[in-house]
Image 1 (cartoon, rainbow, N blue to C red):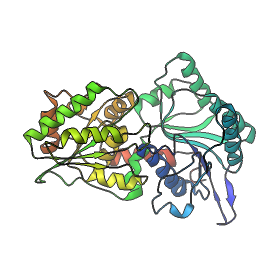
Image 2: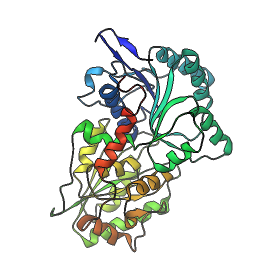
Image 3: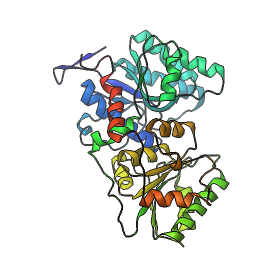
Image 4: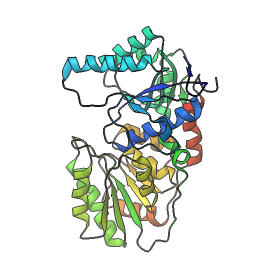
Length: 381
């Protein structure tokens, strides 16, 4: 399944990457940039394609590849016809690729019909299926669990980003051994160069804020976060930087960020960092913070990889799994109901002025994330 790259005169393994891409989400954008970077560096890939209509800005180390999205315009039809066209489109590009790689994120909650159909096409074409940096579950039904188990049977390689997902995968009796790796975003320093926390000492320290809006966002939780930060600002001369990790018009965080900024500005300076399709630029803005309060998982990982002390609101299981895996001190873990305004200001004060850090170092996390590339069967062949 390795092909001869005629332009370069050498073999290459050229993936078609599939995932939740092109939706103006920094977490998914970083999956794209790191997947492309890793495919080129470790798999000698020359032609990289993504099942997406648009891609983020690629780092300089990837740019000469010109990674290709396979959907270049908005569809004229919807529903079943659209699904069939997408399947045909993917199949054509799969025939030109070495195999499909599902890269990053919570893509294995259930298996829709489209994935089942693509799996059959993959088998007919004699291509491989693989997954890197994924999480599995939680499943709503036993049928969902069995569907994911059946889907993974065809994979040739699988790495998981958290221990809970890896243990679940290893209980599925798969014909290979799933590998415990890490979230692909842990390779940020390798792709963009290392960034480091500036330490304590700023006259007006900056608390970063990464909010995670969704359709069912709890107004009570929003009020708790606002009140916590207002009380913190009354205690200390701070400034707040709200980083919008999801810029989608319907599902994004901008309106929530604007409401938060409006409530906080009477008490401290507030700036909003708007979504950018350059995840390296967002990482630099996070790294400039003195500390970070994260609800978006990847806002927490961005802070962690820049050695910025952070606390996390565990709005989904994936946040708790990440906090467990790195050994984040329990004091810096807030439940999905949000921080308690009576106690959380003191916690955030310690985060700003006397922080303790996770047990797992960012360097160790980076080494584990690299397993998603160096552990692949086609690496080094």
